[in-house]
Length: 143
Length: 326
Image (cartoon, rainbow over all chains, first blue to last red; front, top):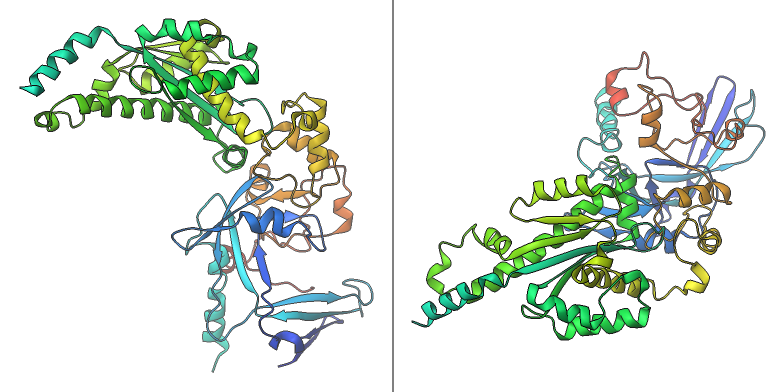
């Protein structure tokens, strides 16, 4: 499916997934235990964050952000699923009746790393458990 | 026969016990590591320390400190002076103080102090082992720490806080040792001065790359330190983690006053409100709420997160919710 389209409550949402198949972009997604009041490019990413990332003997990762010790791991996606990074195209006002919000995939198959503050990543992390919904969805809606 | 002879000699020397001194460098500054140093020597060596000029370490010039450090390196060993140190980086200090356990600097410092005492005891115990013959191997199991403690007459500790409390904690942890805890102990006891130099030299080596004319003393009240910190701010990431202690109030204030964007931590939200369901990173960029005062902490808008009421626990525990708009 190259594009997704849905209409509900008078609002149109569109997703353009045509660029999803572009492989090897090496896009990283970091799911952080904090909110950053910023939207845009983070120029200091390499110097301040990526350079602090180490992989432990157990295969998990550790990093520092704003002085906090983060512990994380890559989020494995179930087979048959892939992740996309969407960027919003700005058209019309947000969330208004009749407005159209459209999203475009920018680069395919990112590697998602989720981070906990202080605690080691574990099977019971909500980030990981959230994906269990996919199995349930499969059971309910699959063939 | 040889073994017995050594044993006798060991007994003869028993009145020549050790004294130790403990001091720190860099506890207060917002920059660099905090280093705890320990030095120990036989009581009979103390006059040599005095003659060499081990005194109030604050009065010593960097050159003099270097000279005294060189001296210690030269005479290092059981008959001269021996030493150990424990350094905690700015990054580790900040991370420990900001993590969910919220360790206090006192706790971190106490752990550091215990580590260097243990290191000294291990070294002294090992030294004792070398003297004792192989047949004694069995009996020394578990005994070496107390043997090492018996070799030490007194441990002198410099402290900034309440000396009595600190002494009680140390005695509780090392019942076999006798502690003297005083403020400005480095002025009074040359062996504490030696410990202070060990700590200070190690800390200064780390900060050598930073010219003090630029960064100032590193103490929070220093205007040069403050303006240097301000010049270092990255709007998203803040300071360079390995040098700056994020947990210091100075750091927090400068981040607030500077162009740095606000970062709000989930664990800190939990302190402030109870029971409300959170989607960790679905941070709302709702412009309206961003402008509530200078430091609006609650910025995750209700439009993004539901309270969780009426949502099945399967979804609640996975922090999943249905959204109508995106």
